[in-house]
Length: 393
Image (tube, rainbow, N blue to C red; front, side, top):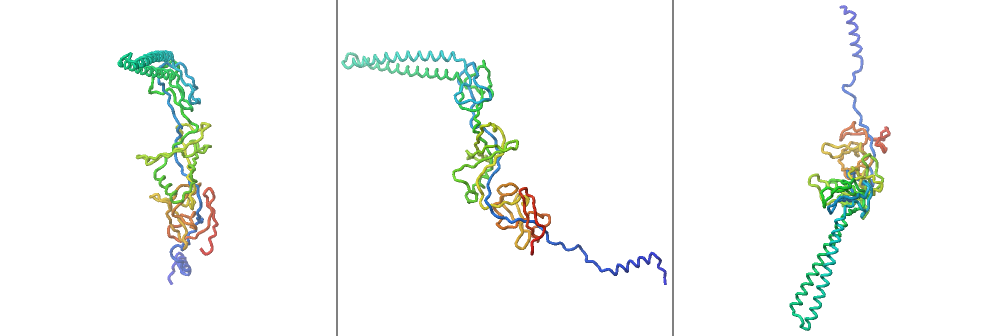
């Protein structure tokens, strides 16, 4: 017999051992159904709020300008302080206005005397004409003289009123109450009638307005909700508004919608809502940017869907996955109208009793068989579930 050597004997032994072992099936073992966590959806009444950007504006603004020419003699207000309607703000040199008033008053007295004389002459001539002692022409001339005297008296009185107004305008008063800004002139400055630059500006800031901007598409959506009965509102009660300030803190007062502009911008497709707020502490100042939450009412029979359970495609349409009756993952398109805490508010696409998948998305695709496991979600959106699958599913 041929000697195969030590190396050849070892190889032959390994071949025999391998041949005696049972063969294993080819390919990976069959995968089981994906286990997913779900919660059961139930309709509920959800407060309907919308978040809108806004800017604070004064309730009323008055720019102070002189109505007569003159030199500023006195500034009677404290810059940045509160003034009331009718308070004296500026005093101009009024000597020439007093002189003009005195001259106008004298002209009135002269005109009154002329009128009195003309009236006496007319009465006398008219009486004499009854006995044909004077000609009719004389009576007509007396009547004409009287009418001219009366017209001259009325003109003199008008001049007197103009002089009085100019004298009063030498003292500049606040047309409205509010907070007054910085004076643009000082004592001794010359100001002119109806000049372009304002002497100062008064702004009413308690209460104060906030202009909010919303899209016309959102307006139509809200109207549809009201018309369909899904959105319930208390009749006659204006929507309440809460503000978040630029520092992230909530404003302590609640406002109400006071005006809706009936025009949509042709360039931006937006319209303006105006809300009014108490502002006794002067926290809100004109020009501030704020974020507003407008309480529109209550959505009836809506669904709160955890945000983690909603996906959006390139078209922006929201989609959820539910466990169907035969335990397959079924995709549903939904309509959302805002958020509530960590949930989307859904008005269309979801149904009562749907088993909404909230966990295990990476384990399945639409139409795949799944093993549903009931889960819970806390207020922070964290999922908790019993890892033991339901019996028979």
